[in-house]
Length: 87
Image (tube, rainbow, N blue to C red):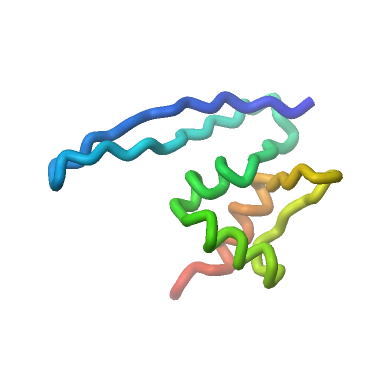
């Protein structure tokens, strides 16, 4: 069974006084794998909808499609991020 706790947090930025909302994701240790939605991955990576769509269309980011639902394995996203590290 896949469970994760999602906490919505808001931060006020000093410049311009705008408020941004972001996700903080906590996967429990009981989970064998944590599955994320597109919105959760966008928040986790701090990327836009257009960027994630481009990454998916070009096959540059790992994801699973189950019918119409698109999911991402957090472990695969973390491993993919490590391949993008600049040395």
